[in-house]
Amino acid sequence: MRRVVVSTNTIPFDIKAICYAHDAINDCLERGEAPLPTSALLLDDMDECDTAEIITSLDVAEAWLNCADALVVFVDQGVPANMRFYIEMARRWAMEVEFRSLPQWATDKKCLPA
Image (cartoon, rainbow, N blue to C red):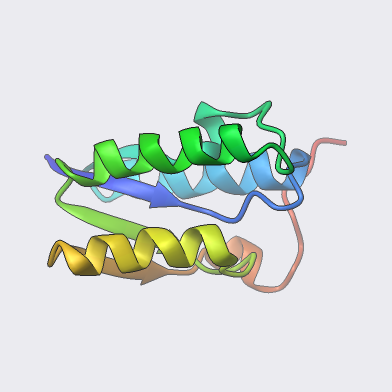
């Protein structure tokens, strides 16, 4: 099974970000991959203004990128600085970086609970 680190935009961290991250993980599972999400689900209570928490998030991603087969970047919600950092880190290690879009999010119609 291909091990992939999943990168999705979590800024702002809200229900849309969580739903999008879940859909991204499901996309990977449907492709037969073993996905590991970055901060979207691992650090869901992270304070985006707390430098220590941001560093922890980056350290977690770096640890997993070091042993993954690829970084999969989901782009429908944008690619902020933290995601660009993961992309550059993966490229430095000559890791495959794959960009994906989720059709159900491309029209900006989000899958939100009623």
